[in-house]
Image (cartoon, rainbow, N blue to C red; front, side, top):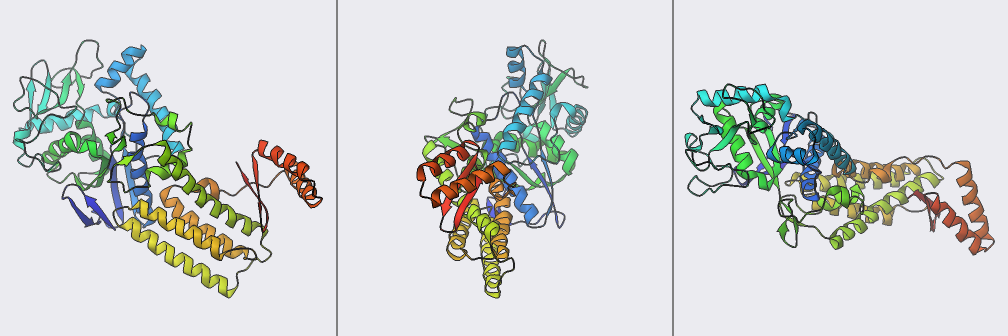
Length: 469
């Protein structure tokens, strides 16, 4: 398995610090509002990488934080007339609702900044003792970037080239324009905690350094996030972590490309975004996830209704192949596979599993992995048909379950459907009788009745195939 490491800017063999175990930190949302579809790409990419690492046999410890104290949270809470904690609690619940719809699995730990204030203060004190932090009276505690000679190594820029990013604090008293806040002194009526320097709250960057170390150790195997976090956030994480631990913060830095609209980055600050919740009113979470994995994670991905609709059609092709196999398994007259069928299943499994793994091993190439599933569907449709044994059909289904599960798709198609209740069975039998009697109007009426009950019938050469809508 190889991953592109943004620290070295090369494609490297993946070798975790401890054989067989992976520590993985992904930067989570600032919970002042619901997430938008651009945020969702990072969630899906990180979740897919985690799934694939587990598939390859690694024991993965995955941590994703919530930033629950921040300028935006304070402003939004005031607008709503509620406390910061109440707002954060609400938005975290909204986050989980959206992430669950995308099939994003919960992290092993979802730490919150406000639950780790003592560790943050301790870390800042350690930086101050080492000469990396200084106090600006009436402002806060700042990190001294000139103290770290390799500052800028992740973004591949030196101090002379760097310019302030979106969240770089401006102060005339800073020693260097790139110095950033570790602790912000309290302003009027702001949430604050006691510290050796005065009441205040953490700066943005310090939280991830502290929480990553708390749950994953001094050196992580993988640190991930959107490419917009490379500078300043991840650069500053490195700067404030490594002097204290004396070790590299992370072995592999993984960043996904941005979602764009009309070629422009999607962001709330620019106003060109859609809330994920609104998108999920139009497309299923599985369709959204499938589309977000349809391009290599490092490349920008354009969002448009036309492109997402095309992805939905592609996903339906995979669903149809699975439904066809389920129908063959249910209606099979033979249980055991013949020697020829066993050879066929072994060939399909070996070939497509290998090709799928080769795609995913090549820097998580989910677009190529999707194409492997399309080819598997086409071959199953061509080579597994009427008269197939239950063992063959179920074996092919298991292969779809295995590979689709890595991408977090096909779950609904692969769920074991419940037996039809007596009324639905009666209606299907009546429809078949009407068709046999060439009473097509009655057959169509019953079909429409079943559709209203959430049962979709498909007439195929091998008989009636049904599925839930």
